[in-house]
Length: 101
Image 1 (tube, rainbow, N blue to C red):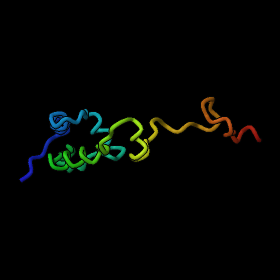
Image 2: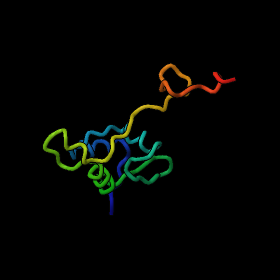
Image 3: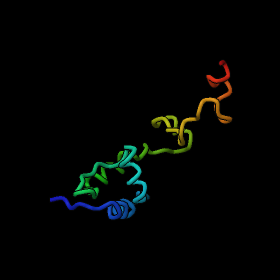
Image 4: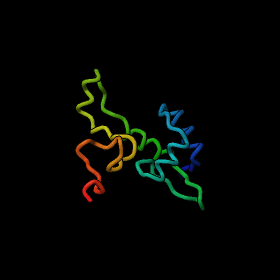
């Protein structure tokens, strides 16, 4: 029978295994996706150690000998929110619709 861990215990388990993941990160990933699978006991998310270990292993890259080896990995995701059209930080070739009316 699998022992279930709450989010804080799950983060501690991952840290003990050598994967620095905070409980807050697990909470965010539960909302946006990409985190380890979990079941709910009422409103509380519960994780199995097997699911946590498999998820952490899946996030590891292939072994590298230098920083040039990053080309062989999956593409890096951009961080942050998309820019608004017409904002001062938007790309210069993007023009707000209001400028044409």
